[in-house]
Amino acid sequence: MIVETLSRYSPKMGGQTALQAFFEGEEEKAAVADSLAGDFFRTIFGTQDQRGRVQFYDVFFMNCEIIPEIMTVHFRRYYEGKSPPTDQEDPMPIAFYGVKGRARVILTLEKLITNPPDLLKVAGSWTVKALSELGVGSKTALGYGRFADVEDVTGELLAELAQAKELEMQKEQKTRAKEQVERMLASLSRGERLAYEISSLGQDARDQERSKGELYQEFLSLSRDDQIVAARALKEYWIKSGDWQKPSKKQKEKNIFLLRLLEST
Image (cartoon, rainbow, N blue to C red; front, top):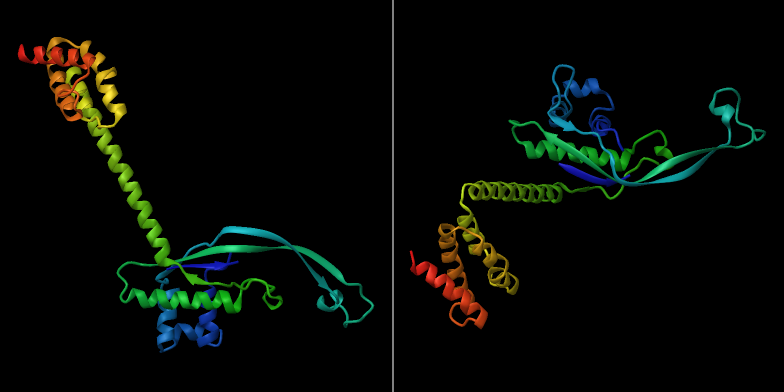
């Protein structure tokens, strides 16, 4: 389960929520409670005798904004336990920084656990309530540390991960296919390699010009045996492109040269 929320938190906050809601805040009661909530608590968070089955990972902001804040203490000596509150003390402003942004909370479940959807659903629900109702940190009474817009983005993130995995697999397949072609080409003669390149051409203007220019010149540089192999590929390509049936004057000379070469074999 992946929960995305506004505003880093303690991963075990869900446990604190469950303790307060069901066991009067006492972990000892949760460890021995004969109830569904007790069973969930022990299975999710564990006890002194067994580890929890749900993993709570460290949470970091996906993006955040650092905001300067000021808290003013009016009765410092009173809060320090040194004197009763009076109007004679000067207020003491304390500067600090707050953080605002989105954070992602990830919970996972051990394999081979019966009824895993309910277990994660309960753990996620407790975590959401902990973040939105209890808050995190020492200034929750002042409104800090409370999370908002908490939503389950498990499906969205899993879809992103599946897409990324699919793209990675496609990339690996292309790499393997390219390596396979390179190994195959390395085992061929020059004529066979040129014939393969010609057979891979498309029918766009650029490839047609390559067949009659760059690749034809390479064909002329081959030995006679290699020329024969490449000539077959050139003739087949030019038939598809129409340069064999309706050649230009210059192309007609190339066609005649190929035809004589192929007829001499």
